[in-house]
Image (tube, rainbow, N blue to C red; front, side):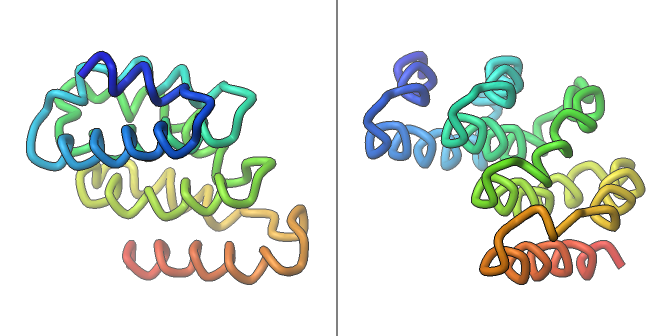
Amino acid sequence: MEDLIENLYNLDNTIAYSCLKELEKISYSSNEVYKYFDKFVEMLDNKNSYIRTRGIVLISSSAKWDIDNKINLIIDKFLEHIEDEKPITARQCIKSLENIIKCKKELIPIIKERLLKVNYLKYEDSMQSLIFKDVEKILDLIK
């Protein structure tokens, strides 16, 4: 497990992505990954957007194990990435909300409020409609 976590920072994105997928798979059937939650939160501040995205995905996949309500404590920081400087990271953050709203119903009002304020114009034209559709999908799930 330690190697998988450490390799999330690997400069070889193929290796890092493979570790992400393995950790994500583990987290759907076990709470083993949740033990590293604080490391995933640290990843949200990384200058590398790939690393931020990995943190986002693993926080989201840990939602069902979040008996300590750690997501509740960092939800504002997490939601900042809905408008991440990198549109791909923003899209991954928005998509990851599906798992959070399934497991953390009490966060739905905060998530909804934040989604309704997304500034699509900060992204290039080609990404605006994609992000809009991602937001609409999550808002439809909330209704």
